[in-house]
Length: 221
Image (cartoon, rainbow, N blue to C red; front, side, top):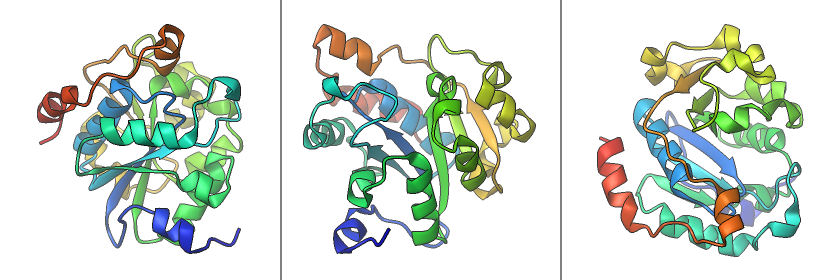
């Protein structure tokens, strides 16, 4: 892949020593659970920023229910009303369909930035279906954020069993951005029961961004 100026303009702020969380997803639509996961990781890992990476489409999901990328980007920006949350469509600009390609590019393009991949515990159950998922784990540390209805035992999933020997004690989560992958931490917090699939089924929009100010005060110092 030969990235051009458009892709470089798509990259949020990055640089030497910055600790950046990567939270990818379809955001179809974005909801409180996405923002809560970003804020929990921001605080617990002492990150400088979290990038909300809006995917053009998940290869494992039916794209017929997928809203246009621009609509999902706009909705994510309205919901992510926080100066350290950055919404981006790097994946679409790169022309990559798989997370492993995106992470490999970012590691190459921003070698002095300390990236951490953030995922909900519900995504851990299907992580083994992602293209070259073990390579993702070898490229970047992973923070798994607790979600309702998902096991708290990382070893209870195929990917969790792979990551179990590299699991970091939650009390040392602040060190994760500095650790050599594979490395992973499971972050517990107040759970949010919202899910994009449920919102789509009810044809309900995501909550208005007014919820965000109180959530940010409660979650991030």
